[in-house]
Length: 301
DNA sequence: ACCAGTCAAGGAAGC
DNA sequence: GCTTCCTTGACTGGT
Image 1: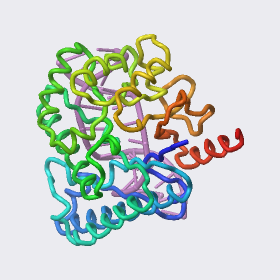
Image 2 (image 1 turned 120 degrees about the vertical axis):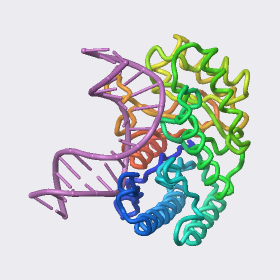
Image 3 (image 1 turned 90 degrees about the vertical axis):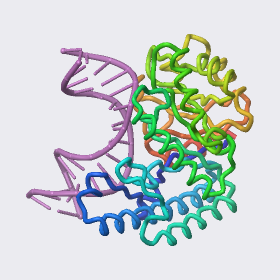
Image 4 (image 1 turned 135 degrees about the horizontal axis):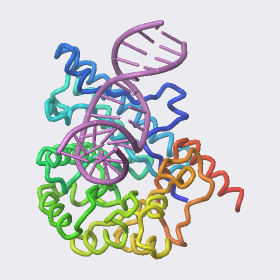
């Protein structure tokens, strides 16, 4: 089974490999030089941790890894707007990125990302749109530096956040989608929403975004349970599956007591309905939850 | 060393 | 309409 780790390894975290971040408030409160140095050191740390995690995934039989969206904090902030090359010791960061690139090449772990839940391509708020585009392009830049394919093999997964009139929202999406670079357009995929009564269930995503733009649809067990049009799970799985030109990367999670809150561990196992799929495991116990699924799978054999 | 509060985003949901 | 909620994990500052 192709399982994929989301962002954090609890095992490595225990060994001291932890991501670091920085808020804009903090950045702005420090003298410029110190702020930049702190930020640079944290970003360097984050790429080192990323390399460790990818190697660990490979060594543990985990076939995929979702990059943390907090890899390069603040640099996309509209009031900061830095590129990696602006940072002190940027050559160290680029060296580390090259190291991560080589680890990916050697291990063949499938790399993806799920940019912020707050990204929108349909908003009426121009700032929200430009912030979203900047954030997506930043992800693309990192993907390119890591030499990841400009295809859905390395997907950038986002949501259509806005509910309402499908036609209007779709039009708004297209307008902004066309502003994205080809590196983003070739990688972007759309995930079923998790809000009840949501407009963007898999059927509707298919009708608009796959049919008209060829964008693959990400099936997610939990979200599909919470947001669907009454069709069977397998029917939705198959429909989403049919939109991918490469092996799909779907999401597996279980809710606590019927809520969207993610459980610590899986009770069930991902059902791939006989197909080849990569599963992002969105469970709070991260690699420990994956380990458990893999060990149960082995017991079954 | 530890703990509680803070931070960030934009649409949803509630009043 | 306006406010609060949602979500997440690490930072921050006080003890």
